[in-house]
Length: 132
Image 1 (cartoon, rainbow, N blue to C red):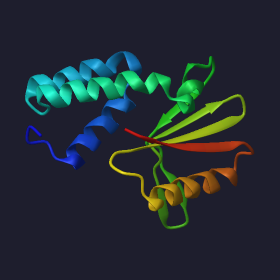
Image 2: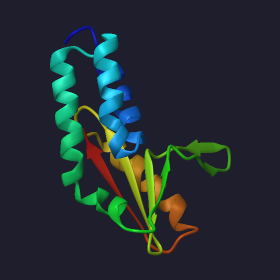
Image 3: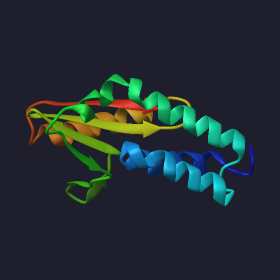
């Protein structure tokens, strides 16, 4: 709708979710004013961003002392992996990978790969896919 394809929509949301919470709506406003998002997509994206606070996996973002890494590379020999978000808090890592569209088996496989790679270094690693 509005000339924006699914890939562009997903990329835009991924980028917005990398911003600190207080800057996400400013980024969304820029997309709307530039014509990248129609009014319909602007409203839909606003709802997605507002619903992110309710996601249980993101609660560790609010903990004091949490360290947040966005789009950080994990190297495994010749392969490079890049989860959307890694949250380090109280000796625990939470890996978050945002997905758009319908759930796919390859999404789960990808998340398990991230968890396995980081479990080789950290003792308590968990992860969750968040479909947006």
